[in-house]
Amino acid sequence: MGNTLLVRADKAEKLTADPAAVVTLLADLDGLTGNRSTFLDGANGAPPHFHTRASELFFVLDGTLQVLLDQDVITLERGDFLVVPPRVPHAFGALKGADADVLFVFTPGMGRFDYYRLLDRVQRGLADPAEIGASQDLYDNHYVDSPAWKAAR
Image 1: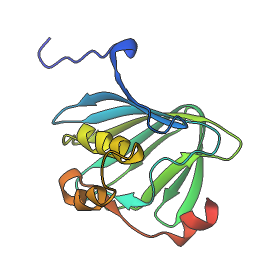
Image 2 (image 1 turned 45 degrees about the horizontal axis):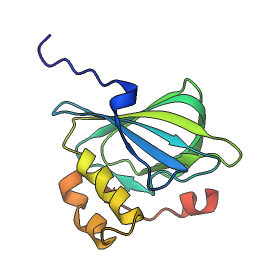
Image 3 (image 1 turned 60 degrees about the vertical axis):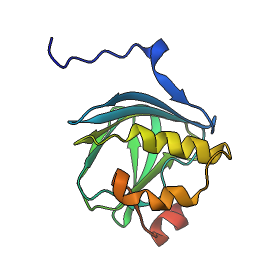
Image 4 (image 1 turned 120 degrees about the horizontal axis):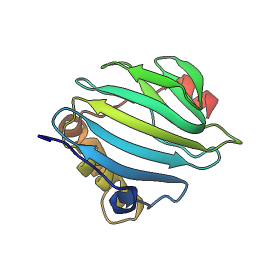
């Protein structure tokens, strides 16, 4: 079975610093990183950012997800699939009035779980928010400003 990975739902690590946006860590391999995130009514996910090396795949398991895609704000519904290639600015969060349950996959993977854990520690007050900015190159997560996203959210 080679590099087979099985993650049982009840054994997966859950990051719960923000109960309105829970991240369940699934796989962090050289080829891909995967997580499942659940967002309650209108909860924010990630602010505007881009990746230089990774493509990010979104699959909406349930609910409605609002997504910034370059300069456009679009809505993804249950069953929708989106691939955001490297260098395209994007952001996401549950649409106001709706929850969202989303599977995210990054390819290639690159040890991104530590980034999610850092975000969780910052939200808990256990780490300095400046660490997020300092980690942009390490985790290939580069923040940008987006007037379109500000207007939509």
